[in-house]
Amino acid sequence: MADLLTKAARQSRLPGLAESGWQAVEGQDAIRKIWKFKSFSQAWAFMSRVALAAEKADHHPEWSNRYNIVDLSLTTHSAKGLTALDLDLAEKIDRFAPGAEVITDHGAPLLCLCEERAQKS
Image (cartoon, rainbow, N blue to C red):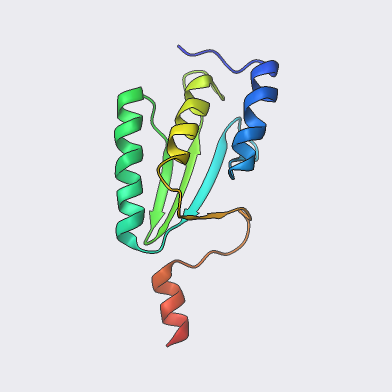
């Protein structure tokens, strides 16, 4: 089983992830990031790359997808909180979506592309 992050590891690694858009999950020892892609196929391709990396690491995210939006959280369930597995996977994931918009307001309503199109018509 992976060990929970030490205070030193949190202080050294979490700020860099926060700069790329990862945020703490309220009420959990977890991190979350939301991406908005230009299309469903870009979101799906991103999810496929993440799935392959997660499978290789034997560490899997909690996530949802709505058309061009991917909402992903990382925590290590067996450790009941953040471990190096989560931070390592987050750093890999960040390399898979260089052109996507990162949503930083996790509480704001977020429309997917099809909902945006419907509002315009």
